[in-house]
Image (tube, rainbow, N blue to C red; front, side, top):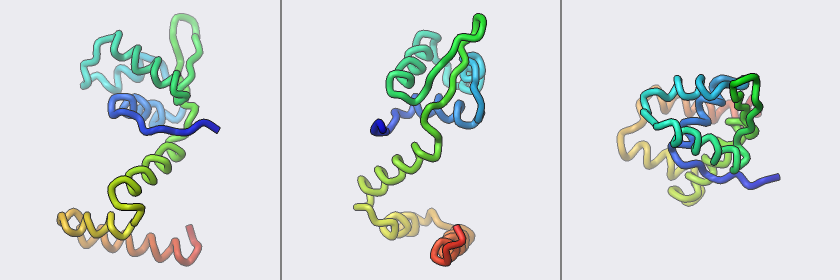
Length: 127
């Protein structure tokens, strides 16, 4: 199994479009979803090529169109990314993450209630 590495923001933006589609997408579909980025065509093609080299995407030619499919599921990438961020910024401690959110007033009462309910379900083995 290949090691999943963190993607640069631009490549992650492309992958989010592919993951959100949940089906093979054309290059045009991806470009249309990211039209606010104003990437030149060569830049966009380079992003797709890098994602293929890294093993995140594959493509097939369907007539005159390239169709892209994710090789790495979003959930798998998010698990790796979450562990990396948690380890890098909070010493691997989920409690430190929550404390940092609290200290910056980033948690609302509703957020705390949601976290509490989730943790209770997790502890009871319902998740």
